[in-house]
Image (cartoon, rainbow, N blue to C red; front, side, top):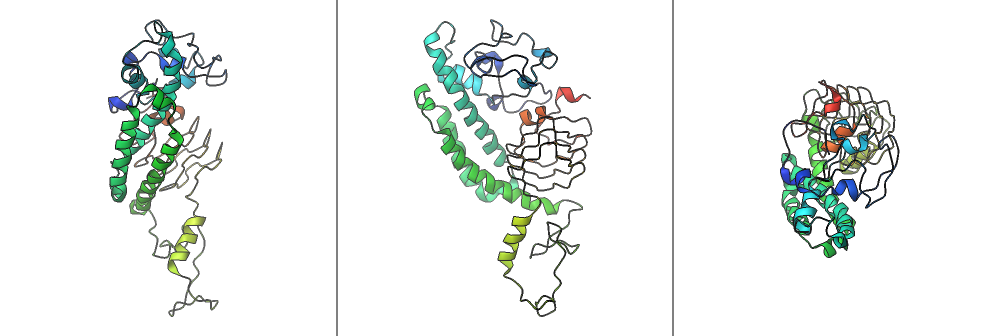
Length: 327
């Protein structure tokens, strides 16, 4: 139900409501909140669902209090379940299939989301060392989407997701490592220090004598160990961080990992998010006005639709500016 406009992504991984039996409007529950005007149970058709499986208020969803619908995307799972898994059988004249169809839909949606990430990772040149593994997982995930209803219902999606995430993490690290190649970025020395004499996390340089000893007389630590410590202290690692409402205006987040971070209502105005890993980041109502998202990866259209921004927000070419951001 994305309300974005512009070039269409690959049709396979984008919702095609014309070939779906309104699954997102029936199978999924929602609760009255800032995102939904009313509550409904899983398996209960939304009151706005028309007989042709289209939304009766699609162009007025935000005005009617259904903002949650405008930021949801099934990644093409709706038509996959409707037309492939269940062979085009409408659940209304065949109610015996309804509950099975509704149970399978979220499973396939997760698989299609993984296909989206795997497909994107294979376009990331710095991640070439892990491309063979990514291709294998892409094929395995494709095969899972073709399973029958009973097999899909019994599938341990979380176990498969963990395998995929391990490789996506490695791919992301390879891409983020190129952040220092960006114009104006301070380049680190082999021991993890930047040209301004500070570590990546801003610590002052421990100056050394020509024989490799620090001025306090301690021997130079093993370089690999030092690098690991520097990375561990890095302020660019925000995996799973609670940054709700955080003031990050103009923040330098080049090459940062924000995997799974809570950025609800965060102020990212003018932030530098080039080459940042945004997989699973919660961007609801985050202000991206003037932010630079060039080269950021694993950012999906639903995440972008949930955020705020304007014409000054720089987007990756694969994503489109949401309608509600204005011109």
